[in-house]
Length: 299
View (cartoon, one colour):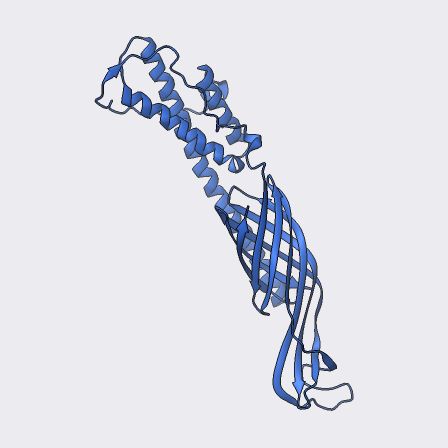
């Protein structure tokens, strides 16, 4: 019962942490969209002032337009993290900037106007073609993260200690992975005993104090991108684990039944540039709990 409780508790903690991170992430994106919409409004207001004959300091105009372009590039890079409502708003603001006609959807999001003192600079009069087109980097949102990404990560597991590797491929948000881990040695069991050291014939093993472990895990499953740097994965496969004792004659005995059967796991991958860090947990037949850490590259 305690093992099942630990699995349920760990799952709930992971779900709650993911939801909290996602909520905080959406709040940050909404703030950027507010700034993006306000910047668009300021640029269009500046155009109206130019058309009315007002002389505008060069530095003010350049800074204002550059601010809008920078926000556009930033939000475009964050496109995989935008939900449907945020994407619609992002596109609407871009259309407003290009055409000068404010979409009706943006009228439902009132923003307070922010006025700033004009910098002292040489005043010039801009032409009527003041509005700049969106930069070439502003590709359609659907094209964001459309490239194929490959992961290769050596891994280490604890309790029992195993070594292995994980490889994955991802196109857009979805992908797949496979992981292999094991602990191998030359110890080959000649007979078996219980965990109390009782042999099949009722006698007792005479151990010499040496012990060994054999372990194997082979899993595969889907890989899903939550945003541009964080992915989660879950997989199933086969796993086994066995403890061995050596007797005074140098022969090895397998101890107890060991573990053998269905292996399930779940975890997350965090990427920074071409480096990826992974953390996960696996279980064999829901009778063990093995944490795994990995560090590798993506390209």
